[in-house]
Image (tube, rainbow over all chains, first blue to last red; front, top):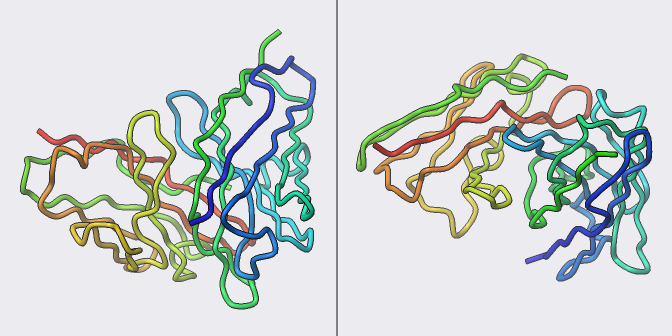
Length: 125
Length: 110
């Protein structure tokens, strides 16, 4: 079973960029039927999909966040990353890295399979 | 994109069956067979219970089952146990090549 682990700063100032990395073990970023992505959960609230990236670099993002989100993969280190720009207090959340199983030829994103334990990022001055 | 609609809370007695609904549109739940369900215990990451509407991965109790009719998906927990107290979320693929979660349902065992 793949294992995922988030890392990055726990505190970010308003208007700055939030950057997180997810290290993957037990599976290759090159897996043909997997996208890699991010989900967040504000304290006491529900889950929100942020976006997902394939090893080729193809990406899909939540339309509500698309203008501020970018993701990348580092195949040499088997990890992927998230950058969210111009953060506000509303971006305070636990951020989970996930893998997303896709259909044959990865035309459809099917479900979130493995999850990292999550990391709390607080936006505050 | 709007979250899928789930009841805020559902409760039941031990041994009973409960059903959690998840309502979307023809652009998500109604249009694809890619509905999944997740259980989130307090202070833990979510865990996938059901994928592709009604499939259960190995290791998940057969007390959990999923179904879909039109734009509404459902998760049924049979033989409710104290350990089932948790938050439950549905998710669906959408026509915009995105994924969307439900609003979440808190299950209480009376």
